[in-house]
Length: 536
Ligand SMILES: Cc1cc2nc3c(=O)[nH]c(=O)nc-3n(C[C@H](O)[C@H](O)[C@H](O)COP(=O)(O)OP(=O)(O)OC[C@H]3O[C@@H](n4cnc5c(N)ncnc54)[C@H](O)[C@@H]3O)c2cc1C
Image (cartoon, rainbow, N blue to C red; front, side, top):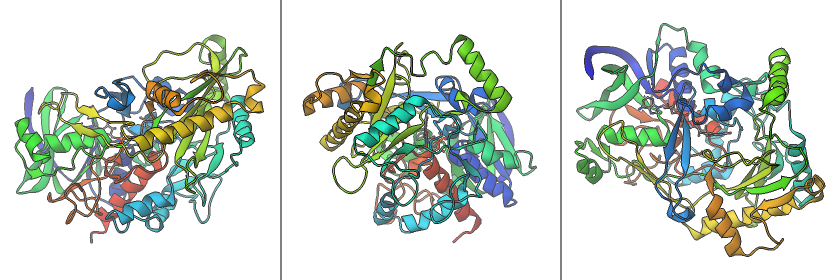
């Protein structure tokens, strides 16, 4: 590789132009700071990113990382694909756009785990400030924020059949999962606006895209944070086969996601000392928590199949696809405005007074990222464990930045998680048996069998089909760094013992929130910008 001696200087470097990185960049530039934003992936200029229903075509393309886990002991030794965004907007450019914040208790738990200032009362104003909700406002919602949130304008008939069936099974309808009470089933609101995806690249970054204060570089892989005398002074990156450096006057902000962020810290000598030494990396800061505490939402679908042509199967083919495309082009309406995963809900399967399972519903039979289409009409009712107790790990395979990381999620390795998943499967099977789905000819394909299946049979089904809901978090967790050796960042998101370096993405979550993770990540990024712009 050619080494360029070029070394520019900027106020801040933001590493990774994903959900969080785009937010922080916009906030800093808006405040008059110069920012260099380095993103390894290409620009977000593919139409399938912006048309809501077509995001599934981006997953698996060069705009996504397809991380592969090690064989997973909790799921019979299978490996799982864990996709992540790899383009401007990151996950917010390839995700299912569901807008969920989690439960108030999630943030109160963070507060009580050594993160004062991160309780629900502290974060709610930030959620509201970032939210531009087209329907809701008031105590729990913001109408004027940058992150556009809207109701779906197109919903599939099977979605409504599910909503009816869930009510018949006893679950109440909830028209606001982000209000006072998360419990119940209903339609998701999505981060979309006027029939288009509202990624953070679109809603935040684009606002400052032409500012002379912004240096935006895509196709740049950051390989190391440059440290001098215990402080971050710049980053090393490569682009088009050439190595470059950029120096900072103020700080480096790392937002490469829950897999990319710990990887880059470790490559820079910040991480578990013994492991770094094993890879021949000079230890700059021995931080054993880097890469630990991996958490993800794991689901095990219940499939209902029917002979009737009532699902999305075939809608992306031939004349029907042309019709949907024309409708979208002419009037920004129809199937292509849908996020496909239109409905679901939150249920309390343990009677604890707090939902412990989230359901995502797709009006089609869908498997995991790498599985082939099933070729039949049907519905997928997907329960996931909201607050997993299993913990995994991200570690380096070698000191070579191009080497794939070692991803050991350890999903379903606690009895508690398996029991919660089984109760979720039972609830979804019950919903599938209600009249509103039954009268469409839907019968259970998987797990299949009699109404009453044993715990062991359902657990076996869960382990056989378990897949990620794409919410990896926690690998650089926030905490009380003075007393907690495993905490990586403090409550102002500063990396413990390393000056001028912050982490501000999904990796800092001490525990996984009870819901989808994009809105919480945007909240974290907004707070990071607040901390940078108003130093303590
Ligand atoms: C398929 C899928 C569906 C999802 N569905 C939903 C949903 O419906 N609702 C929801 O709330 N959440 C959803 N999520 C999760 C949500 O999108 C993520 O939690 C969120 O995007 C995480 O944001 P982040 O900033 O931590 O990381 P990311 O958004 O992943 O950003 C990290 C960025 O850093 C870049 N990067 C990594 N390494 C380097 C490097 N060395 N140099 C330069 N750049 C680098 C990456 O390319 C990426 O752009 C989904 C995620 C996926 C993948």
